[in-house]
Image 1 (cartoon, rainbow, N blue to C red):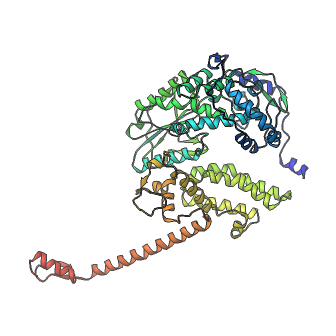
Image 2 (image 1 turned 60 degrees about the horizontal axis):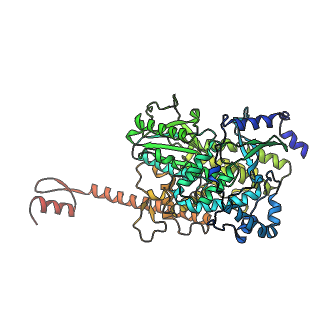
Image 3 (image 1 turned 135 degrees about the vertical axis):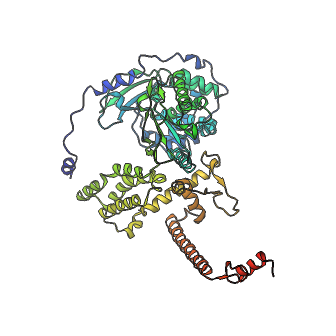
Length: 596
């Protein structure tokens, strides 16, 4: 079996470059272009913070350490398994030590070191820029960071959620940003308005965060001084090294940035980028997912030069002020037109270069294009799943069980469909047939009959898409403060289970968009949709069919009656005008000739 797997894997790979680790270590350090970390020692208090709360309790630490997942250890080589199994003995010791770390603004040196695992961003990486540095830090430090991160989010969560930020926040995901964009752009096309989207790409965003700028921002947000002081200690005098095949390089200083792979790093980045909203014109729509920034203009100003150029200049000036960089070649613009052909936008300049207009753009893993043609997303999903049939056949030849092969399909195939569900639900009938055909092909390879799929916990593919979309929309509308919920129309129906009503759509595109389609779905379906999603969705479809048949029958009857009335005509004996028999003729004589 091992030999078969080796043959299936293709030709032997080339031997790794023995100098690769050192080259990457130098490359990751050179991202700072020789700049040194500013002196941030004045942020670190020399005296104890007597007002610092005792954040670390026996219960809190025990709960966090009991949920530690198996992962690679940091430079201190303390494994998650060790900390988890020995937590009852360790918590009593760690509790006072952790609280003293806050009180005295102290971070152990072992917590300031990180082993970097380089993750390729492209298929064939050729330079350090083609790798993403993921830091493996102390597991014990991550336990500490979780408590600090929870405290920060408790203080800043509402401000972050109203900051058009969807990344790294509880109750937020990429789908929140994507569904907001789908609704806004579909509504714009419904209203015959043009949209100009500007996609910004930061170069090394997490690595270039200036520590002094960050700490000043934390103070301006009125976070407690003990917290700012400890974070300064946490960021100062950090070191990193690259480890490949268990062979480490020499330690190098970290001159800037927040730690990718840590618990606290992403939260600090969100705080760092909060004020970018303040520099943008008020007419601009903004969506942020960590460092993925999307701005778009809806209406007559979309194709003018002034407002789009002001947006780009504002973001670029913010970057200069905050010592960040934009990747000019990866910043793009896209027009979502209200007709079949988009008018070219006015040239928009960034650092002397004209931003490239594109027809489509990969945004948070989905394909956004100028015609809002969601069939393109299925092509993207299919390209990712194209190797699954061969893989499943090979696993069957190698003797893997049906249960394992089914799990492989769920994790490597259905996961892509679930992620793309808000777009795939709006594809045309031909694409829906393609999706069903691919899914049924996989079932045949797995030797599962369609009627037996439920026994293997595999739903009909369109039922799965419907259930996923309903679940997502119910989560969104359950939060009144959600940016998307705030734009929905409240219903006056007292018995409505969802409290919102779909808009009256004039175009098929908007009527079939994610929000409008599933507002109708939830309104017309059962209130307890997720008690038994399969049965409920099937029942809803049957009821919908009956309603359509009833409406069709009623319409046919009315049309037949109207035709019969049209044929039953007679002439007025006074003026000769043709009128319908009976009441029509009587009304004509009474009104026209003033007789009873």
